[in-house]
Image 1 (cartoon, rainbow, N blue to C red):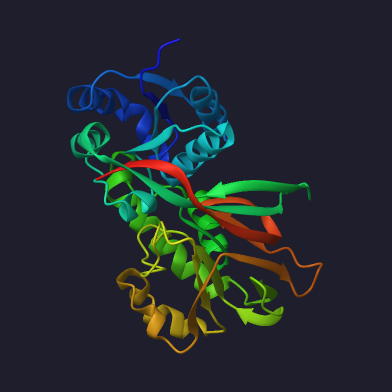
Image 2: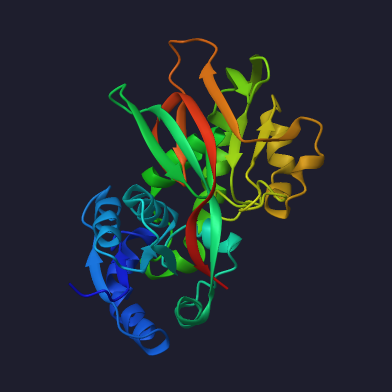
Length: 316
């Protein structure tokens, strides 16, 4: 079997724009990177399976072409293989938050050059154990951020709204920030505050009321929000950002601080560093959705654990 680098393409990413853009992306990749093999996803979860198969077959580099959800699925497949395969990123999605952390350009020629000449870095990975929609306990690795509260409502609204207010060809350029900004306003006005039980490492369990909790391995989420400005990918810790019971007006008035990374100075925002935490609803009958790397995958209760230096990534 060929051991060429494998590109796993999600044609549905960027609001479906990746499908039509792929011939150009492929041409740029061949010019600035070299030969490669290619596989296309058809449904959610395909990238996990394709990446695991490719890693077990001995491919040294598997490249995710899509957004954060595609990158996360490819990483999950590599991690499930238990091998030494490195993850590469060819951006073509809505949010692009993980490639921001790695300083990978959204321009294909520049990203391809990083894939060819960049360094290989070993980073931490988060592991989440949570409940899926059928109430079964499942496991998922994540690279960027896992969260609940307003973020889950924002993701749901972005998925629902799609890019209907933008030309399809503009999805990569404007769709991420515009989609997330509009959804953030709507979610802030509609999302209820949550009462949850939180336990960090060996600390006693606490009951708190929150608008948002982010378990951050990387800095960005939500289409460019610098939610965890001090997060490092190789320090063996999560940065847990807790946004307390702020009113909607206060959140909207200070929302720009999320993009600047200055929100941590607000009185109701706290950053805690930990390697493990568990979260559950204070009311056991309440269904609190969680998002992982930009995808709605289940609900609380959940346990989050950092896995130090678990994944190789090609970066600048």
